Image 1 (spheres, helix red, strand yellow):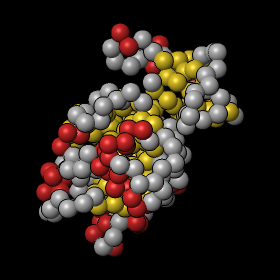
Image 2 (cartoon, rainbow, N blue to C red; image 1 turned 180 degrees about the vertical axis):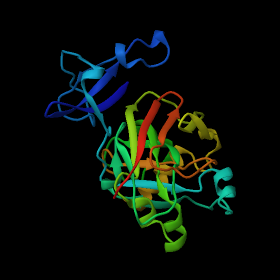
Image 3 (cartoon, helix red, strand yellow; image 1 turned 30 degrees about the vertical axis):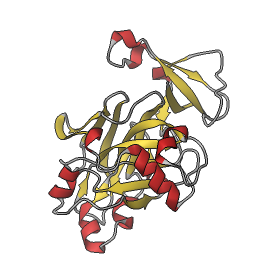
Image 4 (cartoon, helix red, strand yellow; image 1 turned 120 degrees about the vertical axis):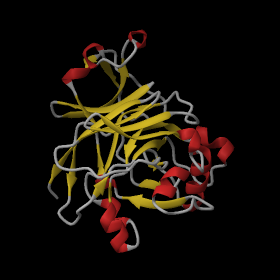
Length: 264
């Protein structure tokens, strides 16, 4: 099931994206959304009507209270950063105000001279939890979506910590929807800039898998419905500039598209 969040005129709602999967690749022309009453963090209450997909504006599929980023979770990315993989998850927080949805613009801040893309698998938490055992992680996960941990690389180096570099408004695109029926253990991930593939990886190569990350994060802080864990990025990070088109694609989920513009 693909759970989306969308706006139509002045109404914002959650819904389920429906399309004929036998046609192969997702075709927005033939897709539709079935709205739901309330939120998706429990039993779904679907409305008995559908809306053509192209008539709505897709939004970030959740509004998290926090985004927990995981650094150096792929050995090849750690190597390209001249670093070693950590002994336990290396975490940082991105503010909720950094979150944008598909089609929204990534804004390059004037404080930075180098901003990079970092395509990642994003885990969406489905219920409040604390001290979750890895074996039970799937019981607290709503589903998965595409994420882009946009980073001001020069500020990350200058500051010696990551809050400013990863915390600017628009620096956390997620979407286009939440896929609830997915095994996250072996998914192909690519990032293309203006059609040129810059990052290629597979979630099988993560140092700490999804279950371990949920266990670790929930041992540190309470996770709330809608919170997001970004699971790290593979090698291939590169600068993005005004006018670029960024596409993060994850097998079994779909693609997250965002343009890059100047502006704070």
